Image (tube, rainbow, N blue to C red; front, side, top):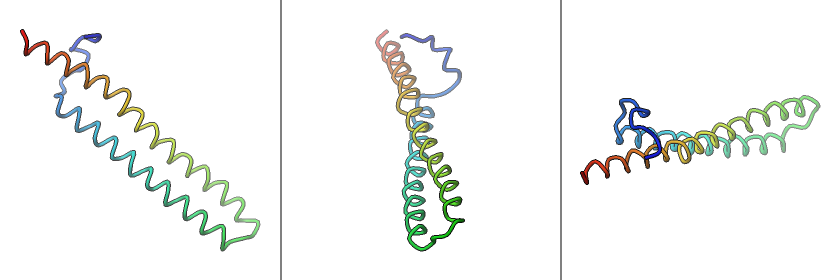
Length: 99
């Protein structure tokens, strides 16, 4: 095991897997929200054509991109960081059951 088990504090494998699943679900919801927001911007642009729309569109795009960035960051955290911890704990538990 690369990490000392004390690095994981007092968390159960089940709780860590549930947390990972919750983070992945949140990422999915944000991704779906991003799609909806993108569609709203598209629909709005076809009906609203004045100088104020350009300003609105730039702000809206920035917020829309931030939603996508947060979704990707959560997914990355769950898949890359949390999964390594889960794998390490599972490996440790397997070695403990062998002894």
